[in-house]
Amino acid sequence: MAANIHQLPWMVMGDFNIIRNDSERRGGQPRLALAMEEFNDWVGACGLLDMPFCGNSFSWCNGHSGRSRQWARLDRCFLNTAALDIFPDAKLEYLSRTSSDHAPMSIFLENQFVSYGYPSFKFQQMWWNKHVFGRTEFHIAELEARIRGLEASLQSEYIKDVEDDLVVSQLELSV
Image 1 (cartoon, rainbow, N blue to C red):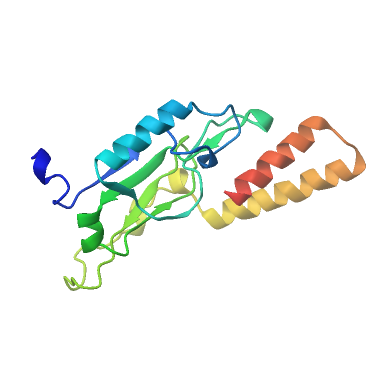
Image 2 (tube, rainbow, N blue to C red):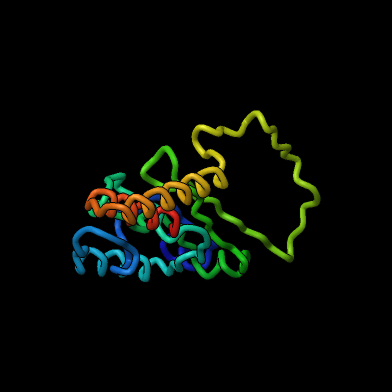
């Protein structure tokens, strides 16, 4: 099996609990270079590539407020070149994080060469869990309103905690 690992198409995804480089985090202390180096060596030894992603830049947040808040890209999907040949347009999307410290991920494996007709799966609106995923438009509008309120508060009186809340809210909106 080990001899075929680079020839067979495969992908692996999940929470790896490590970043590949320091640009994949915001806040907190710098990560150990050795840990990132070992992870990158493993990725290379397995012949894996990071699946391109869209959406949020970070997949995890520690949930703290103010300046102690940390963001990182701990969750990802890797695929090898054999899988990329089959799914050249594959991409990963990080959805909005709501009830967990990790963002849900969606993988799109659009393949222009293979068509199986119409999907047999029918989505039922009752399956949508609004408490977990919510309505992103509502969350964005809520954050924008919060930012306006915090900015107005800072116009009349400077309070460090309000400024920290503003920074966090702006960061959440940008992610």
